[in-house]
Length: 164
Length: 359
Image (tube, rainbow over all chains, first blue to last red; front, side):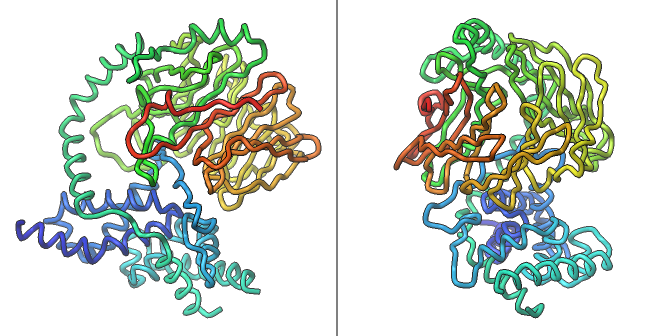
């Protein structure tokens, strides 16, 4: 194994699971997220010489996976089966229904517009700053702030109602 | 709830998702496949034309059954049976591997599949003037209305999105033999467009932002249907037009509503079990909507919804075996449900795995 592939393997082991979960929450479809995460990682490997020098390779991979999964142009060609539900799982996306209503939280997130969801995922799950989120998603810092604020307000209401 | 509470709930929900079931080897295989695909892209453009030409003559199932353009038999056999609706099959979901590792295969991916009156799988090759099929609607007269996209500059990188250049969205009408009888560019730069339904004279197109247009197939003239506004967003709903009704199923719930296209009057709102796959078909008299779905346990059930009252009747189609629904159609008062027994490990031809139940 070469130094490059060792380097990439470390990146993969550190980021793959987090990337998949971030995409699954954003896309609301774990199967599509798995494909998107694999595609993003494959592209990172193909361009690893450049990607590893990126300020935020994990954020880069998230952006690539998100673009791949939501590409307007290619969406139909990639149309895939709905994730076949696990009979042992809860109702939402194969998530185990737990006492903390994880499925309810994911459902509340899915009701947000995709751009708001992407910002929340970057800030909360990928631990990116406002500036990093703006760079990853290709929007202005002010847009990140306003999407974050609106998204959190919606979630506060949805989750509050659920608890109430 | 504080912001901290909300972020904690999000983190816990993400952690509760099932594991990705992928590994580094899968990523490296994907990388190699991408590389091969790039290398063969230029050759593929030539090869696919040749393959399509061959496929138009005949396609052979792995079991030796001929699967050719469906229309020759359709026009004689279906009409001989009387009122049997054409029965398109939504097999796309079944082509990926199931969690058990099993999957089904079709003779060719670039084809429109339906169940023939003889209960056999029929395929009509997709013409090369589109790269993909966004939606298609079989008409009772044997024709098919198809919406597909066409990349006019393959291999040339452009900014993706509704403004992308050199990309066509074409509305096609295929004759009963699968030949292109009409093709029309329906893309408007900066907008997206989807095919929701069609009759012998009209295609119903959804155009962003939130408009349904009646597209005259003969002239191409479009009329905006204003009786039903605001139209539910296609980003949050599955939308279908059948028999003058707009059927809307929100992605975020398991509901289904029907509204009259011309007046916007809501006819019913039904709450069905959440489904892994769902297909719907309005009866020829427009009185009953058949909805076949496979539930999270993999059991197929047929629901008949009385359009006037919203009353729902339920009939189980499968019991105890993991299955998924492919299509539904009417023959008089009988509903024909086509479903798939989810295969165990290995690849299985769709023609062998599909089942037909008349209810």
